[in-house]
Length: 435
View 1 (cartoon, rainbow, N blue to C red):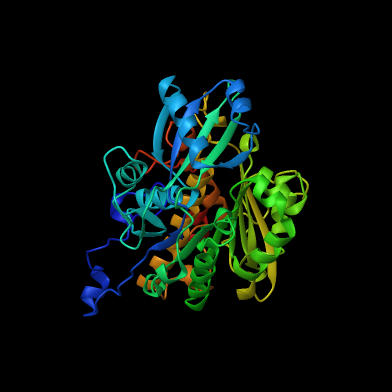
View 2 (view 1 turned 90 degrees about the vertical axis):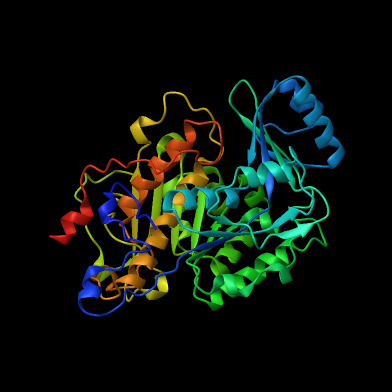
Protein backbone atom coordinates (compact mmCIF):
# COMPACT_ATOMS: atom_id res chain seq x y z
CA UNK A 1 0.00 0.00 0.00
CA UNK A 2 1.05 3.60 -0.35
CA UNK A 3 2.13 5.39 2.78
CA UNK A 4 0.48 8.74 3.52
CA UNK A 5 2.02 12.03 2.59
CA UNK A 6 4.76 13.22 0.28
CA UNK A 7 7.21 10.35 0.02
CA UNK A 8 9.28 9.09 -2.90
CA UNK A 9 8.09 5.84 -4.46
CA UNK A 10 11.26 4.06 -3.35
CA UNK A 11 10.31 4.80 0.26
CA UNK A 12 6.88 3.16 0.02
CA UNK A 13 6.63 -0.20 1.69
CA UNK A 14 6.26 -2.51 -1.34
CA UNK A 15 3.34 -4.87 -1.62
CA UNK A 16 5.03 -7.58 -3.68
CA UNK A 17 8.80 -7.19 -3.32
CA UNK A 18 10.58 -8.82 -0.39
CA UNK A 19 12.67 -6.76 2.00
CA UNK A 20 16.39 -7.19 1.06
CA UNK A 21 17.39 -7.33 4.73
CA UNK A 22 15.09 -10.27 5.31
CA UNK A 23 16.30 -11.91 2.11
CA UNK A 24 19.94 -11.54 3.22
CA UNK A 25 19.13 -13.18 6.54
CA UNK A 26 17.30 -16.05 4.89
CA UNK A 27 13.92 -14.94 6.25
CA UNK A 28 10.78 -14.01 4.36
CA UNK A 29 9.08 -10.71 4.92
CA UNK A 30 6.02 -11.20 7.13
CA UNK A 31 2.77 -10.85 5.23
CA UNK A 32 0.84 -7.71 6.08
CA UNK A 33 -2.71 -7.86 4.74
CA UNK A 34 -4.65 -4.68 5.30
CA UNK A 35 -8.16 -3.53 4.56
CA UNK A 36 -10.95 -1.56 6.15
CA UNK A 37 -14.61 -2.54 6.39
CA UNK A 38 -17.52 -0.12 6.11
CA UNK A 39 -21.29 -0.37 6.31
CA UNK A 40 -23.32 2.16 4.38
CA UNK A 41 -26.71 3.06 3.05
CA UNK A 42 -25.94 2.62 -0.65
CA UNK A 43 -27.25 5.65 -2.47
CA UNK A 44 -26.59 8.03 -5.33
CA UNK A 45 -26.02 11.76 -4.78
CA UNK A 46 -27.94 14.05 -7.13
CA UNK A 47 -26.54 17.58 -6.97
CA UNK A 48 -28.78 20.37 -8.25
CA UNK A 49 -28.85 24.18 -8.16
CA UNK A 50 -32.39 25.24 -7.25
CA UNK A 51 -34.39 28.36 -6.31
CA UNK A 52 -35.67 28.78 -2.77
CA UNK A 53 -39.28 28.41 -3.86
CA UNK A 54 -38.66 24.82 -4.95
CA UNK A 55 -37.79 23.88 -1.36
CA UNK A 56 -41.05 25.39 -0.15
CA UNK A 57 -43.12 23.52 -2.75
CA UNK A 58 -41.62 20.19 -1.76
CA UNK A 59 -41.80 21.02 1.98
CA UNK A 60 -38.06 20.68 2.51
CA UNK A 61 -36.66 22.66 5.50
CA UNK A 62 -33.74 24.71 4.26
CA UNK A 63 -30.37 23.42 5.46
CA UNK A 64 -31.83 20.22 6.87
CA UNK A 65 -31.91 16.57 5.81
CA UNK A 66 -35.43 15.26 5.13
CA UNK A 67 -36.50 11.70 4.29
CA UNK A 68 -39.06 11.68 1.45
CA UNK A 69 -41.18 8.94 -0.11
CA UNK A 70 -40.83 7.39 -3.53
CA UNK A 71 -43.61 9.48 -5.10
CA UNK A 72 -42.20 12.83 -3.94
CA UNK A 73 -38.69 11.74 -4.98
CA UNK A 74 -39.92 10.82 -8.47
CA UNK A 75 -41.68 14.17 -8.88
CA UNK A 76 -38.62 16.08 -7.63
CA UNK A 77 -36.25 14.19 -9.92
CA UNK A 78 -38.48 14.73 -12.96
CA UNK A 79 -38.66 18.48 -12.30
CA UNK A 80 -34.92 18.78 -11.82
CA UNK A 81 -34.31 16.80 -15.02
CA UNK A 82 -36.89 18.71 -17.07
CA UNK A 83 -35.55 22.11 -15.99
CA UNK A 84 -31.92 21.02 -16.42
CA UNK A 85 -31.06 21.86 -12.81
CA UNK A 86 -28.95 18.75 -12.14
CA UNK A 87 -25.22 19.43 -11.99
CA UNK A 88 -24.20 15.79 -11.60
CA UNK A 89 -25.21 12.37 -10.33
CA UNK A 90 -22.57 10.45 -8.44
CA UNK A 91 -22.22 7.47 -6.10
CA UNK A 92 -22.61 8.76 -2.55
CA UNK A 93 -23.12 7.75 1.06
CA UNK A 94 -20.73 9.02 3.71
CA UNK A 95 -19.10 5.63 4.34
CA UNK A 96 -19.08 4.75 0.62
CA UNK A 97 -17.33 8.07 -0.07
CA UNK A 98 -14.80 7.40 2.67
CA UNK A 99 -13.96 3.87 1.49
CA UNK A 100 -13.61 5.01 -2.14
CA UNK A 101 -11.28 7.84 -1.09
CA UNK A 102 -9.26 5.56 1.18
CA UNK A 103 -8.72 2.98 -1.56
CA UNK A 104 -7.67 5.71 -3.98
CA UNK A 105 -5.24 7.28 -1.51
CA UNK A 106 -3.75 4.04 -0.17
CA UNK A 107 -4.07 1.92 -3.32
CA UNK A 108 -5.42 -0.62 -0.87
CA UNK A 109 -8.50 -2.78 -0.48
CA UNK A 110 -11.65 -1.87 1.39
CA UNK A 111 -14.85 -3.88 1.82
CA UNK A 112 -18.28 -2.29 1.59
CA UNK A 113 -21.25 -3.94 3.26
CA UNK A 114 -24.73 -2.85 2.26
CA UNK A 115 -27.37 -3.63 -0.34
CA UNK A 116 -27.50 -3.46 -4.13
CA UNK A 117 -30.33 -3.82 -6.61
CA UNK A 118 -30.37 -7.37 -7.90
CA UNK A 119 -31.37 -6.17 -11.37
CA UNK A 120 -29.29 -3.25 -12.64
CA UNK A 121 -30.07 -1.45 -15.87
CA UNK A 122 -28.03 1.18 -17.67
CA UNK A 123 -28.61 4.63 -16.17
CA UNK A 124 -30.26 3.45 -12.96
CA UNK A 125 -29.03 4.42 -9.50
CA UNK A 126 -27.41 1.01 -9.02
CA UNK A 127 -25.51 1.39 -12.31
CA UNK A 128 -24.24 4.84 -11.38
CA UNK A 129 -23.16 3.62 -7.95
CA UNK A 130 -21.10 0.74 -9.33
CA UNK A 131 -19.57 2.77 -12.16
CA UNK A 132 -18.40 5.56 -9.82
CA UNK A 133 -16.81 3.37 -7.14
CA UNK A 134 -13.10 2.52 -7.09
CA UNK A 135 -12.26 -0.98 -8.27
CA UNK A 136 -10.27 -1.41 -5.04
CA UNK A 137 -13.52 -1.27 -3.06
CA UNK A 138 -14.70 -4.88 -2.72
CA UNK A 139 -18.44 -5.04 -3.44
CA UNK A 140 -18.69 -8.84 -3.42
CA UNK A 141 -20.44 -8.93 -0.04
CA UNK A 142 -23.31 -6.57 -0.92
CA UNK A 143 -26.71 -8.09 -0.18
CA UNK A 144 -28.98 -8.23 -3.26
CA UNK A 145 -32.41 -6.61 -2.90
CA UNK A 146 -35.50 -6.48 -5.10
CA UNK A 147 -35.79 -2.74 -5.69
CA UNK A 148 -33.80 0.48 -6.00
CA UNK A 149 -31.03 1.72 -3.73
CA UNK A 150 -31.31 5.17 -2.16
CA UNK A 151 -31.15 8.61 -3.72
CA UNK A 152 -29.89 11.72 -1.95
CA UNK A 153 -30.77 15.07 -3.47
CA UNK A 154 -28.30 17.82 -2.53
CA UNK A 155 -30.22 20.99 -3.38
CA UNK A 156 -28.04 24.09 -3.41
CA UNK A 157 -29.84 27.44 -3.21
CA UNK A 158 -28.35 30.74 -4.51
CA UNK A 159 -26.98 31.60 -1.06
CA UNK A 160 -24.88 28.40 -1.09
CA UNK A 161 -26.91 26.58 1.58
CA UNK A 162 -27.33 22.84 1.01
CA UNK A 163 -30.63 21.10 1.67
CA UNK A 164 -30.87 17.32 1.51
CA UNK A 165 -33.83 15.20 0.50
CA UNK A 166 -33.28 11.47 0.92
CA UNK A 167 -35.36 8.73 -0.66
CA UNK A 168 -34.42 5.52 1.10
CA UNK A 169 -35.48 2.92 -1.45
CA UNK A 170 -34.15 -0.41 -0.17
CA UNK A 171 -30.94 1.00 1.33
CA UNK A 172 -31.88 0.08 4.93
CA UNK A 173 -32.68 -3.57 4.21
CA UNK A 174 -29.24 -4.97 5.12
CA UNK A 175 -29.75 -7.98 7.41
CA UNK A 176 -27.50 -9.07 10.27
CA UNK A 177 -26.91 -12.47 8.64
CA UNK A 178 -25.44 -10.66 5.62
CA UNK A 179 -22.48 -9.45 7.74
CA UNK A 180 -19.72 -12.04 7.11
CA UNK A 181 -17.46 -12.67 10.09
CA UNK A 182 -14.44 -13.46 7.91
CA UNK A 183 -14.05 -9.88 6.64
CA UNK A 184 -13.00 -8.78 10.13
CA UNK A 185 -10.16 -11.30 10.49
CA UNK A 186 -7.47 -8.97 9.11
CA UNK A 187 -9.41 -5.69 9.18
CA UNK A 188 -7.78 -2.49 10.35
CA UNK A 189 -10.96 -0.47 11.00
CA UNK A 190 -14.75 -0.64 10.87
CA UNK A 191 -16.32 2.56 9.54
CA UNK A 192 -19.93 3.42 10.42
CA UNK A 193 -22.31 6.34 10.04
CA UNK A 194 -24.87 7.56 12.56
CA UNK A 195 -27.46 7.29 9.78
CA UNK A 196 -27.32 3.49 10.10
CA UNK A 197 -29.15 3.56 13.42
CA UNK A 198 -31.92 5.89 12.31
CA UNK A 199 -34.34 3.70 10.37
CA UNK A 200 -38.04 3.02 10.33
CA UNK A 201 -39.34 0.41 12.77
CA UNK A 202 -38.81 -3.09 11.50
CA UNK A 203 -35.94 -2.29 9.16
CA UNK A 204 -32.93 -4.56 9.81
CA UNK A 205 -30.05 -2.08 9.30
CA UNK A 206 -29.54 -1.23 13.03
CA UNK A 207 -29.25 -4.93 13.91
CA UNK A 208 -26.75 -5.45 11.08
CA UNK A 209 -24.72 -2.50 12.38
CA UNK A 210 -24.61 -3.86 15.92
CA UNK A 211 -23.62 -7.27 14.55
CA UNK A 212 -20.68 -5.68 12.72
CA UNK A 213 -19.61 -3.82 15.87
CA UNK A 214 -19.71 -7.08 17.83
CA UNK A 215 -17.45 -8.79 15.27
CA UNK A 216 -15.07 -5.83 15.14
CA UNK A 217 -14.66 -5.70 18.90
CA UNK A 218 -14.08 -9.46 19.02
CA UNK A 219 -11.16 -8.97 16.60
CA UNK A 220 -9.83 -5.82 18.35
CA UNK A 221 -10.67 -3.74 15.27
CA UNK A 222 -11.07 0.02 15.94
CA UNK A 223 -14.61 1.29 15.36
CA UNK A 224 -14.87 4.64 13.57
CA UNK A 225 -18.13 6.62 13.63
CA UNK A 226 -18.96 9.63 11.46
CA UNK A 227 -21.89 11.62 12.83
CA UNK A 228 -23.64 12.54 9.58
CA UNK A 229 -25.71 15.66 10.36
CA UNK A 230 -26.38 17.91 13.34
CA UNK A 231 -30.15 17.30 13.18
CA UNK A 232 -29.72 13.57 13.62
CA UNK A 233 -27.47 14.02 16.67
CA UNK A 234 -29.59 16.78 18.21
CA UNK A 235 -32.61 14.46 18.33
CA UNK A 236 -30.94 12.14 20.88
CA UNK A 237 -27.60 13.54 22.09
CA UNK A 238 -27.55 11.41 25.26
CA UNK A 239 -28.14 8.24 23.23
CA UNK A 240 -25.15 9.04 21.00
CA UNK A 241 -22.90 9.80 23.97
CA UNK A 242 -23.72 6.43 25.48
CA UNK A 243 -23.35 4.67 22.12
CA UNK A 244 -19.91 6.20 21.52
CA UNK A 245 -18.75 5.34 25.04
CA UNK A 246 -19.86 1.73 24.60
CA UNK A 247 -18.77 1.00 21.04
CA UNK A 248 -16.66 3.69 19.31
CA UNK A 249 -12.93 4.45 19.28
CA UNK A 250 -12.73 7.28 16.72
CA UNK A 251 -15.36 9.98 16.12
CA UNK A 252 -15.44 12.14 12.97
CA UNK A 253 -17.69 15.20 12.89
CA UNK A 254 -18.02 18.82 11.83
CA UNK A 255 -18.41 21.75 14.21
CA UNK A 256 -22.24 21.70 14.04
CA UNK A 257 -22.46 18.00 14.81
CA UNK A 258 -19.91 18.52 17.58
CA UNK A 259 -22.09 21.16 19.20
CA UNK A 260 -25.17 18.94 18.94
CA UNK A 261 -23.27 16.08 20.61
CA UNK A 262 -21.51 18.01 23.36
CA UNK A 263 -23.34 21.31 23.79
CA UNK A 264 -20.06 23.15 23.17
CA UNK A 265 -20.02 25.71 20.35
CA UNK A 266 -16.22 25.97 20.37
CA UNK A 267 -14.81 23.07 18.27
CA UNK A 268 -11.79 22.64 20.54
CA UNK A 269 -13.93 22.34 23.67
CA UNK A 270 -16.26 20.00 21.81
CA UNK A 271 -13.28 17.78 20.96
CA UNK A 272 -12.17 17.80 24.59
CA UNK A 273 -15.67 16.81 25.73
CA UNK A 274 -15.89 14.03 23.15
CA UNK A 275 -12.72 12.50 24.60
CA UNK A 276 -14.85 11.57 27.62
CA UNK A 277 -16.41 8.90 25.40
CA UNK A 278 -13.95 8.18 22.56
CA UNK A 279 -10.20 7.65 22.13
CA UNK A 280 -9.68 10.02 19.19
CA UNK A 281 -11.63 12.82 17.50
CA UNK A 282 -11.46 14.46 14.07
CA UNK A 283 -13.46 17.69 13.76
CA UNK A 284 -13.70 19.75 10.58
CA UNK A 285 -14.62 23.34 11.35
CA UNK A 286 -15.12 25.04 7.98
CA UNK A 287 -13.21 28.34 7.70
CA UNK A 288 -11.58 27.66 11.09
CA UNK A 289 -9.78 24.62 9.69
CA UNK A 290 -9.51 21.18 11.22
CA UNK A 291 -8.97 19.90 14.76
CA UNK A 292 -7.81 16.58 16.16
CA UNK A 293 -7.86 15.38 19.74
CA UNK A 294 -6.76 12.18 21.38
CA UNK A 295 -4.78 10.51 24.12
CA UNK A 296 -1.15 9.57 24.40
CA UNK A 297 0.90 8.22 27.28
CA UNK A 298 2.64 10.91 29.29
CA UNK A 299 6.02 9.18 28.85
CA UNK A 300 5.90 9.35 25.04
CA UNK A 301 4.29 12.73 24.45
CA UNK A 302 6.18 14.97 22.02
CA UNK A 303 6.33 18.74 22.24
CA UNK A 304 5.66 20.73 19.09
CA UNK A 305 8.20 22.92 17.32
CA UNK A 306 5.45 25.05 15.79
CA UNK A 307 4.18 28.22 17.51
CA UNK A 308 1.85 27.55 20.41
CA UNK A 309 -1.73 28.49 19.59
CA UNK A 310 -4.26 30.41 21.67
CA UNK A 311 -7.72 29.03 22.18
CA UNK A 312 -10.31 27.92 24.70
CA UNK A 313 -7.55 25.63 25.99
CA UNK A 314 -4.36 27.67 26.36
CA UNK A 315 -1.46 26.49 24.17
CA UNK A 316 -3.53 23.45 23.28
CA UNK A 317 -1.20 22.26 20.51
CA UNK A 318 1.86 21.92 22.75
CA UNK A 319 2.05 18.14 22.26
CA UNK A 320 0.72 17.91 18.69
CA UNK A 321 3.83 15.98 17.59
CA UNK A 322 2.53 13.06 19.70
CA UNK A 323 1.02 9.93 18.21
CA UNK A 324 -2.44 9.03 19.55
CA UNK A 325 -3.21 5.87 21.52
CA UNK A 326 -6.31 4.23 22.91
CA UNK A 327 -6.93 5.60 26.38
CA UNK A 328 -6.98 2.06 27.82
CA UNK A 329 -3.47 1.45 26.42
CA UNK A 330 -1.99 4.46 28.27
CA UNK A 331 -0.38 4.09 31.68
CA UNK A 332 -0.83 7.82 32.30
CA UNK A 333 -3.31 9.13 29.69
CA UNK A 334 -2.61 12.67 28.50
CA UNK A 335 -4.97 14.62 26.24
CA UNK A 336 -3.31 16.04 23.14
CA UNK A 337 -4.67 18.33 20.46
CA UNK A 338 -3.73 19.57 17.01
CA UNK A 339 -5.12 22.13 14.59
CA UNK A 340 -4.47 23.32 11.07
CA UNK A 341 -5.91 26.25 9.13
CA UNK A 342 -7.50 25.57 5.72
CA UNK A 343 -4.98 24.53 3.07
CA UNK A 344 -3.78 27.65 1.20
CA UNK A 345 -6.39 29.60 3.16
CA UNK A 346 -9.09 27.50 1.51
CA UNK A 347 -10.00 27.45 -2.19
CA UNK A 348 -10.81 30.77 -3.83
CA UNK A 349 -14.07 29.24 -5.00
CA UNK A 350 -15.68 26.27 -3.27
CA UNK A 351 -17.53 24.18 -5.82
CA UNK A 352 -19.24 22.03 -3.17
CA UNK A 353 -18.59 21.10 0.44
CA UNK A 354 -20.33 17.75 -0.03
CA UNK A 355 -17.87 14.98 0.84
CA UNK A 356 -15.08 17.16 2.25
CA UNK A 357 -15.39 15.65 5.72
CA UNK A 358 -15.43 12.14 4.26
CA UNK A 359 -12.17 12.95 2.45
CA UNK A 360 -10.54 14.12 5.69
CA UNK A 361 -11.61 10.92 7.42
CA UNK A 362 -10.21 8.83 4.55
CA UNK A 363 -6.80 10.42 5.11
CA UNK A 364 -6.96 9.61 8.83
CA UNK A 365 -7.90 6.01 8.03
CA UNK A 366 -5.00 5.78 5.58
CA UNK A 367 -2.58 6.73 8.33
CA UNK A 368 -4.25 4.40 10.83
CA UNK A 369 -3.97 1.44 8.45
CA UNK A 370 -0.40 2.38 7.52
CA UNK A 371 0.50 1.97 11.20
CA UNK A 372 -0.89 -1.56 11.31
CA UNK A 373 0.76 -2.41 7.99
CA UNK A 374 4.17 -1.23 9.17
CA UNK A 375 3.80 -2.94 12.57
CA UNK A 376 3.08 -6.27 10.84
CA UNK A 377 6.04 -5.92 8.48
CA UNK A 378 8.59 -4.45 10.90
CA UNK A 379 7.35 -5.40 14.37
CA UNK A 380 10.59 -4.50 16.14
CA UNK A 381 10.66 -0.95 14.74
CA UNK A 382 11.00 1.94 17.16
CA UNK A 383 7.73 3.19 15.68
CA UNK A 384 5.94 0.49 17.67
CA UNK A 385 7.34 0.73 21.17
CA UNK A 386 3.75 1.51 22.21
CA UNK A 387 0.39 0.50 20.79
CA UNK A 388 -0.18 3.69 18.80
CA UNK A 389 -3.27 4.20 16.65
CA UNK A 390 -1.61 6.07 13.77
CA UNK A 391 1.68 5.89 11.90
CA UNK A 392 2.22 9.66 11.97
CA UNK A 393 1.85 12.34 14.60
CA UNK A 394 -1.43 14.14 15.11
CA UNK A 395 0.07 17.22 13.47
CA UNK A 396 1.00 15.28 10.34
CA UNK A 397 -2.39 13.59 10.15
CA UNK A 398 -4.05 17.02 10.37
CA UNK A 399 -1.98 18.24 7.43
CA UNK A 400 -2.75 15.20 5.34
CA UNK A 401 -6.50 15.28 6.11
CA UNK A 402 -6.60 19.00 5.38
CA UNK A 403 -4.96 18.58 1.98
CA UNK A 404 -7.23 15.73 0.89
CA UNK A 405 -10.32 17.64 2.05
CA UNK A 406 -9.20 20.62 -0.05
CA UNK A 407 -9.06 18.37 -3.10
CA UNK A 408 -12.78 17.60 -2.75
CA UNK A 409 -13.72 21.24 -2.13
CA UNK A 410 -12.38 22.29 -5.53
CA UNK A 411 -14.30 19.68 -7.52
CA UNK A 412 -17.97 18.90 -8.10
CA UNK A 413 -18.00 15.24 -7.04
CA UNK A 414 -18.16 14.18 -3.36
CA UNK A 415 -15.45 11.57 -4.01
CA UNK A 416 -11.85 12.02 -5.05
CA UNK A 417 -11.47 11.86 -8.81
CA UNK A 418 -7.70 12.30 -8.91
CA UNK A 419 -4.72 10.47 -7.51
CA UNK A 420 -2.85 11.11 -4.29
CA UNK A 421 -2.33 14.85 -3.77
CA UNK A 422 1.08 15.94 -2.57
CA UNK A 423 1.26 17.21 0.97
CA UNK A 424 3.29 20.32 1.71
CA UNK A 425 4.70 19.75 5.16
CA UNK A 426 7.09 22.50 6.08
CA UNK A 427 8.81 21.10 9.15
CA UNK A 428 9.00 17.29 9.08
CA UNK A 429 8.66 16.38 12.76
CA UNK A 430 9.10 12.66 12.04
CA UNK A 431 12.61 13.41 10.77
CA UNK A 432 13.22 15.71 13.73
CA UNK A 433 12.30 13.07 16.31
CA UNK A 434 14.29 10.39 14.44
CA UNK A 435 17.54 12.31 15.00
